[in-house]
Image 1 (cartoon, one colour):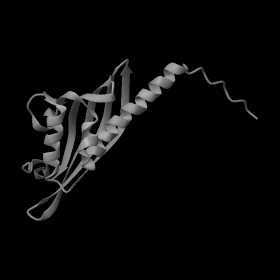
Image 2: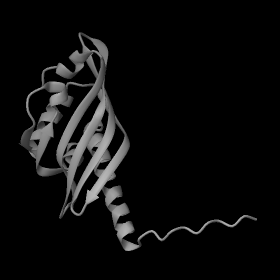
Image 3: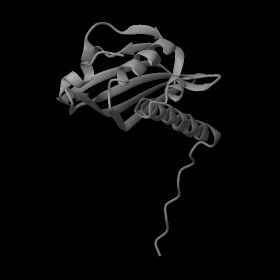
Image 4: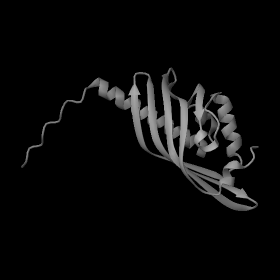
Length: 164
């Protein structure tokens, strides 16, 4: 029987703390997607700091903006009320944690479905989120969200329906 090589020491409590931080950060970014897709606006709001920087300029143009989280959630709620369904799939997470600050880069593929003139249409946006998070007394919260769109397929009118 071949002997297994010794495993190097893994750092003890610091390593465990880091793993717990990473798990909690991944939970936040997954609750971001689930909150939208399930239309659970309370859960969606809970992932954000009270104020956040949003940068969706790769899709909509303009400049990054600082917004109160409550205003952002209301805007997304109104936008998504025009859609029949959405599904945000997240993958390839890369995390950097430095004390009470973190960065999470992740791929996103977001399916949006709406009825246009009585016909079901869809639009899929693919790209990368670049999230900044901070540890707060309520846990990790997103303080900055940047979307880098890499591709769009389907009917773009789905994403431009008037808000309710």
